[in-house]
Length: 300
Image (cartoon, rainbow, N blue to C red; front, side):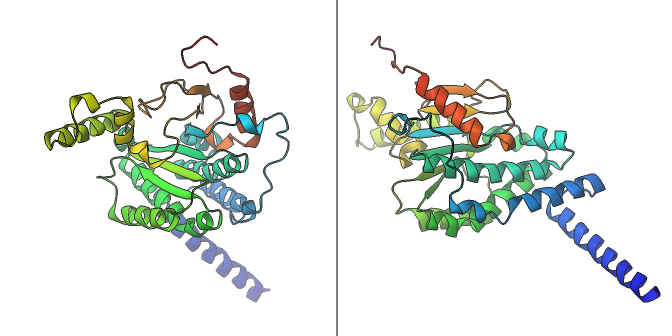
């Protein structure tokens, strides 16, 4: 009996040690409810690979493939509120949001959408608590690094746009690695905006045009909308202007995202927090998009 009790105590202490390791990895203090929440999130991943087998595109019969948007942009809002409501760590909310983005983009591609762009980290997000920022950078790097083979298997090109001058060197190397590993793929494109600002994008484009003008490469008459568009960071994609923008969590603003590119984009603001924005919510958004008449300022 004593031997059994000793064994159980040893297992319990080993469990506690592993818990402290997990807590330090996510940069937050340990509490039992949040620890149980972490276990719940980890179990729900189901190794992420089972999702790769294509079980998501069922029940969207009302959607018309020929009317699908070519480019869907998303502002992934609500991770922190989702975590708070669930009694989880902020970092767990961001992890759930990252997992949702993989599912979201996978479903978009299976529905025939060519480009998905996600506002992963805005320039203004640097103003958040240093611990949260550090954990976000770590999470982004982990997901990009761990998904390189997945994106290669799915033949999905990955591009990262933004200022990128402040992000850690290790993340920069991972970005370069995944962009190099997937640059040859043509039919599916995931764009992650990290340290991105729509104002920065436009100012950067203007500076580039001025420099080219000073070198005699372009003249005043050469400057038009097409030229400016070619200088924007979204010049990495065949479809730089999103047809549809989805923002989750009930906020109804674009928050300095794609200021030029969203000129004629259809906007959908969902009250659903990003980690809960599942297949059904995406199908609802796409159905709403397909019911709209896009006139681009013209009366047809």
